[in-house]
Amino acid sequence: MTAELIRRRLLALADEGNARFAASLIPGLEPTRILGCRNPALRALAKELRKTEPEAVEAFLAELPHELHDEDMLHAFLLGLETKPDLAFAKTRRFLPHVKNWAVCDALSPKGFTKDLGRLEAEAKRWLASEHTYTRRFGICMHMTHFLGEAFRPEFLALIGSLDSEEYYVHMAQGWYFATALAKQPEATLPWLVEDRLPTLVRRKAIQKSIESFRVPDETKTVLRRVRESLPRRGAGS
Image 1 (cartoon, rainbow, N blue to C red):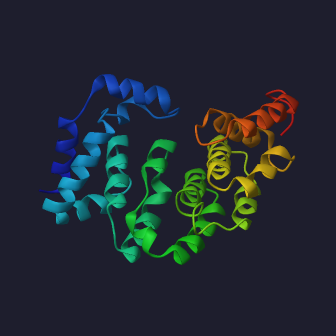
Image 2: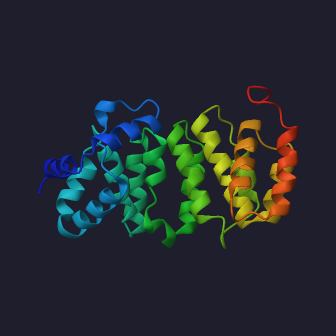
Image 3: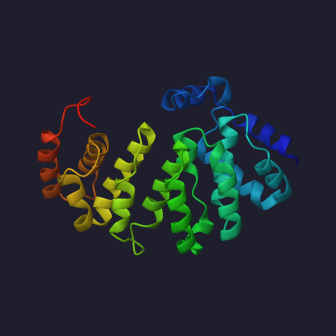
């Protein structure tokens, strides 16, 4: 099987209705770039190809940039299966500049990263400093995935909270991060939402997701609702 035949496998999974739905969720994604392959099918295909067609997989991963959104998604799921840290970091570094939307960004999470968190911390710091929106968002996602448990340090909140960006999808990831951090590290995180430390858009998103979360206690949600009422209206402030 060649990389071209991988595309034929994707064409066999095309779903026109799902393509329209995906286009509605991902602003700026041209409809002609979407086959509409469903994520469970893409994950299953990634596992199959990695086991049965490793050479075709490597050829496919080398063909950047891809033409189709579904190819980008398959690429992300294939990298997610990479267990060797050196390869996981190298292949991710090669792919990130070609990530064009939040869906591909958020699908990318290589298993190999868990084996070298020290290196991941250093790489994530570089990703957070990138000018590329989705490389930055990926850095936030990696902190959310790997550094809110035993590897957490309070300084990570300042690292994510101090990001200087005007990009909507960076702000949304920051809000998502702080909501997740509140559930996992409440004592360190709550002051960031109660006090005026974050851009209003980020703070509002974090509070919204925290209030919606089953992992945040009701008494904390009551505090957050009061904070939300005190925030500038949408469109006002930072």
